[in-house]
Image 1 (tube, rainbow, N blue to C red):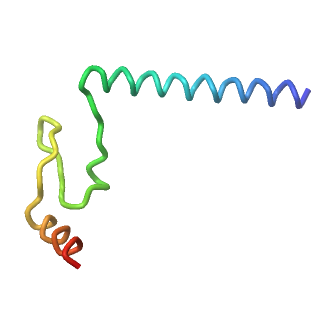
Image 2 (spheres, rainbow, N blue to C red):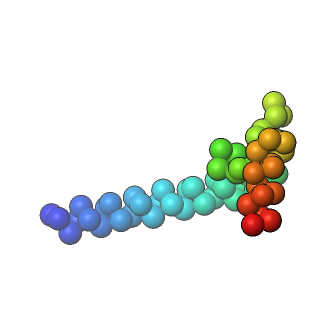
Length: 67
């Protein structure tokens, strides 16, 4: 019984992974790239979803690269 349950869980995991990959690929083809701007120091998003530079945080990034 455990072997069957493990096999089903593995198959579900692979199916979910494939669906996520296909979804990402479709969005990339449509030009809809999602970027988590919270992890990019020095950037934020405008109302259209485009990345824009935050001048105050950008100074920190410039300092990091200089050092």
